[in-house]
Amino acid sequence: MDYQQDLMAEFDREAARTRKMLAAIPDGADLAYKPHEKSMPLGRLAGHLSDMTGEFGMTILTTDKIDLPADHKWNPYIPESKAALLERFDGALPATRKQLAATTPEKWDQNWQFIFGGQTFVDGPRHQVFRDMVMNHMVHHRAQVGVYIRLLGGALPGTYGPSADGM
Image (cartoon, rainbow, N blue to C red; front, side, top):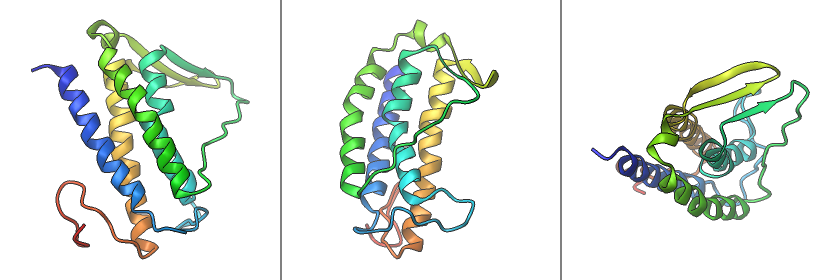
């Protein structure tokens, strides 16, 4: 089995499923909507999801670590509209996919770390970090967006088959 080709095919499938879910956010939805006080607002969650196939995916593929000081202030991407979100998502995919294809077996086996304030949160081979922090993370947050869409009265697209909404 060619792991590289298999991972690229999976990335393409999951990115397409994620794009369908983001496109299903109801037009005009309040991007500040939160189903619970501890939940992320819809816009922040959707923006975070767009980073899985964009900036964060590229960072894992092109650097050896992220090392942020404890006082680092993260400014998450929060889209102004669904159109802006989809434009960002679509715009980032080609570069990430190209980098994914260019990643060598030796690079996949190299260690990758995420360190924040001197504490290591992620430390493992790049192939495992990419699978956990991009692929699995994307699926996880995509499911959350699906819950938000349902609570907002929107129709859900099928992801691994048809949905109850016939999409």
